[in-house]
Length: 367
Image (cartoon, rainbow, N blue to C red):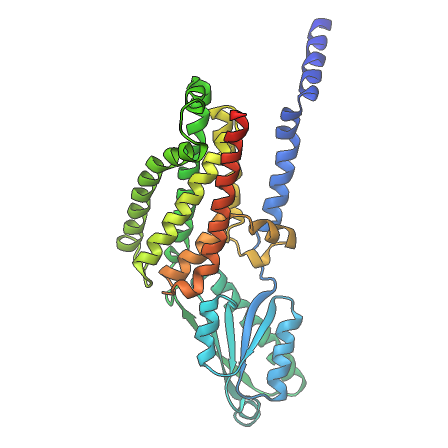
């Protein structure tokens, strides 16, 4: 028995002396719990909306103030006319517009009923449904309070979706799944490429070859780029013909956006492979460090606006976030380069940074 106790104590000491084991046992569960706890939320917080007030009376101002006071909505803009609605949706600056028609208060008092229109961007159907429910709830609460006090009447709300009038979930998961697949497959394939050379002992041959580091990296990327492009075409065809997800924008711009993201994912994989010492470590980094952020912090499933500020800042460094914004803008909204150039610039900057870091790691080994 004493031998067994001594053996157990030895095992405890062995575990406590290994920092990697302690990180896996304690740090990762805590990080995952905090991440899921803050990210997975179906509540609306500070959703950016606009108001088109064609009545400009005291009651419309009270409703706007009540919407703002709930904390669910942030009134980003007051629009001047109906032509501004599509422009703001195309910019992506708002998720919903609430329209008060002329003589809103007068109709409500005189006729006992007044119409109110709500238009939502349904390129994210889950978000649009939540916004509709929250908006109606706040407006019904307002009119109930007024009826209890004075008995003013009923507000008849009319709801309309744009970019996805039928609220089809495929419009959400096809672009998101495309980002997830391209990111994981492309990064995973390249992350083990250089580590395989290290483990097999052929890395030294590459290092003493006349090829420059940038040429070796580009040579590694090219075959995987061709395979990933074929993968991209298959996903787009399945999304279009099987799930009926439209492609309303330019095919050339869509192809450029996808190829840029593939290059970004491939370069990220190469950067991981230049840092990791073994194929196993490279695969673990690619799967764990890329899959969870892609699902949780890219806006694929959970709205970024609902996350704490720290996670919103962290999501800025997630390549799938910018790819999804550009992809949805082209596929669902039919927008051109003038609207998505800022997303493409962010991806180009990330691509340049990953390649520079990868080349630098190669130079360090050469020295």
